[in-house]
Each structure stands twice: as C-alpha cells, then as structure tokens.
Length: 328
Image (cartoon, rainbow, N blue to C red):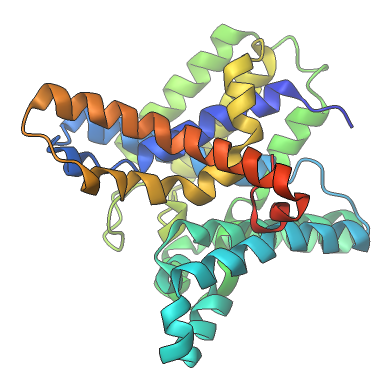
C-alpha cells in the first residue's frame, strides 16, 4: 500500500513536538517562562493522543496481522527495557519482570510506557473489527465508563497493566480519527478556517475549564503517561474536537517533504531521542548564554537527526534491526 505523505507529515510534526515536550531546558540554564510552560502544556493536549490514534488507522482483523504487530511493538519494548534495566535483571529479577509486565508509567518511569499502551489500543481495535455488534457496543460502553469514572481510574492507574486504561480512554477519540480518515473525501466541505477555529476554541476551553490534577509530576491538565486526562464533559469533548481537527487539518494541507521524511523515522526518533537530549548537554558546558542557546538548538536538531542516521546505517547492515524499532 502506498504511503500517505499527509500522515507521515503529521507524524513528523508530532515527533518533533515529542522531542520539544521532553527537552531539558534546565540543562542549558534556560528558565521555563509562563509562555513556554503553556506552549508545552498545549503540546501535551494532542501529541501523544494523536500518535496513539493514528497507529490504529490500518488495523486488520486477522491473527497474522496481530502477531506481526505484536513483534513490531513488543520486541522493541522488551529490548529497550532490558537495555535500560540490565543491572536490575541480575540484581532483582523479580522487580525486573514486575516492571516489564506492568508496562505503565508508574512502573517504567520512561517514555516506553507508550509501547504497551500502543499495543493495548491495537488489540482493542482488532477486537472491535473482529467482533460482532455486541462486542462493539461493549467496547464503546467501557470507553465511556473509563471517562465517566476517570477520577477513580486515576487512583488505580499505577496498578493497571500495559496502559489498558489509557487505551480505553482514547478508544472513542481513535474511532473518530479513523472515521475522519476513511471519509476524508466526503468531508471536503469543512474548510480550513473552520478547522482552525475549532482548534483555537477547544484549546481555550481546555486551558480555562479543565481542572488541574494533583497526582501528576509535570503536566497537570493532560499527560496520558500518568493518566492526567480531561475529567469534565466539556473538557472531554474539547479534547476530542482538538485532536480530530488537528488531524483533519493535516489531511487538507499539502504534505511537507521534510516533515514526511522525519515522520517515516518517528519510531527510532521516539526510542532514542532521550539518550541524546539528556546526555549530550552533560558533555559540554558554556557560561555564555549565546553559546548555550546555540548548543541547545544543536542538541534539539541532533536528537532528531542522529536516530535517523543510526536507523539508516543499522537497517543497511541488517533488516533484522526493525525488530528493535529501528525501522522507518
């Protein structure tokens, strides 16, 4: 099947925002202003929800597809978890396997929480397309219940394995994303100004009406990793509208060649960007603010470029490296 360059552009845009959202400004003696904090908060409204949702666009209802999907998600998850916790496997193997099989932010405390949640969402939609009408109704009902009782789910998020709660919460959002993609030609009458207006209004509603959550470490309105999600009806609807219209906007605009290229390598960038973001600044320190700012920009660029370079080199050595996520 021919690649959709608009989807690749969106993935490129989102992975750049992932890097931006994780950027350690304090390593460069840059204080986060209120404006910067609000920009990062806005990014968290949609960057990971959309990443999860677009992963379910091409799900097939056959078991061979599910097995292949499991290998492309879970093998990289196990490999990189082992890489990060190799000493724990020798010293405390019970803790190692507990964290591995829980696979949520509370157990991992790393970006790899995304991979179990991604797999859980894929399984849910596999069941949705494999199942009968009753199964579909049940999945919709459970997704709504997770939203209705999201305050309660927040309290047990740390013991919910493999991001199942996250996957269920955004199940309906993902359904709408799939609906828009499959009916994009019929939705042409929705123009760009209307899409931009919907994005602006839904963002304002999330900023001003969605309450702050006290259980999170960083992003108190929306952070899927820690199940900081919209808990009000207005916030939930705004969350869905914002994500759907950002997605729709990228379907309407002409794909960007650079973003499309970056988007094809979103998986290796996601897996490897923190290794660069959190290690490179420790190698060189500058007292000059201009040099610091310049080095910060270089670090940001390298955190995107180097994973692409590593991926291209290793995939030329052997295509088996796709099984640890280094695949476009």
